[in-house]
Amino acid sequence: MKAAPFDYLLAHDLDEALNHLEQYGADAKLIAGGQSLVPMMAMRLARPEWLVDINRLQSLKRIDVLDNKVHVGAGVRQRDIEFHAQVHVALPLVKQALQWVGHQQTRNRGTVGGSLVYADPSSELPLSALLLGATFYLESKSEGSRQVQAQDFFLGPMFTSVGETDCLTGIDFPIWSGGKIGCAFEETAIRRGDFAMASAACQLQLDDSQRIVRLSFGLGGMDGTPRVFPDLAQGLLGQTLAQVDIHDLSALAVAQCEPGGDMHASAQYRRHLARVLLPRVIQQAHQHALSSSINVLS
Ligand SMILES: Cc1cc2nc3c(=O)[nH]c(=O)nc-3n(C[C@H](O)[C@H](O)[C@H](O)COP(=O)(O)OP(=O)(O)OC[C@H]3O[C@@H](n4cnc5c(N)ncnc54)[C@H](O)[C@@H]3O)c2cc1C
Image 1 (cartoon, helix red, strand yellow):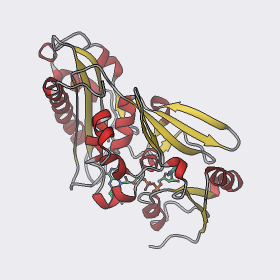
Image 2 (cartoon, rainbow, N blue to C red):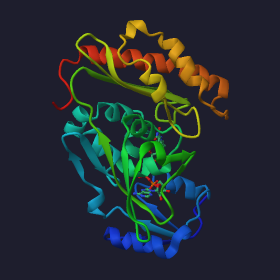
Image 3 (cartoon, rainbow, N blue to C red):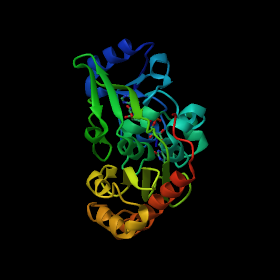
């Protein structure tokens, strides 16, 4: 199929883009990399009357690696993060996650902000942003600037707190520091590059006695939004991994999810995958932390 007719507006700066959104409201859509929006339009699942192109907005293309966070402009291409040496060190989980996102060709065009706003429940960047506790920066003509924390950003499948006149301008990803930090990201998809049937991610930090002092883990594709389990993670602090039954822990996490079934995987199979993937990433993150004598940006 071909897209329904639309008009194209090239924004030269953020103000111009916001003005277009304010004027056309629900009839307009921002286009960033187009890797999700264009297929949706081609299938006529999206029918914007106005496409507002934000690819020329240099203010959305900054990557700033600071002491305790990395600020990523919403318009930064996924590939630019994937190959950013400082981001590798500062946000190893994001680097790992990106290797599962689509294909080299889609990552060349697809933006970090586009992926987060599209908010597919199986998407890797939303899970990573939630797990790390990212902060989202939104801008609109009527509401001005506002910040939304990751736990309030993802509201449902392909549904976020980004309103129809909002532009996501950037995201802050917190940097963990202090030594012995490890992370892992794993998923199962029908083919490499497809959206995951289920995914799991973990980042943890150990002290000198190998006790867990910081832990965050989560699942993708298992609910309407990515899921993290701060209460379960909290219960493990102060313990070594040998003292924890990670299979029981994973079963508790999976029991909190309500996966759907579709042509790719039944709900039961998704639960099975999550129970396999979650212990695996916890174990891998632990190994990674044990082998990391360097800390992240200290
Ligand atoms: C073959 C293929 C395989 C893929 N596999 C995966 C995968 O495994 N995992 C994965 O996560 N993704 C996958 N994707 C999707 C890809 O990651 C997209 O890049 C991403 O979902 C959207 O980013 P984009 O920049 O292309 O956004 P666009 O397609 O341009 O926009 C997506 C949506 O976000 C909105 N939007 C974009 N930028 C902003 C902004 N700054 N502020 C407000 N709204 C905004 C748009 O209006 C639109 O509604 C795949 C895509 C393809 C084509």
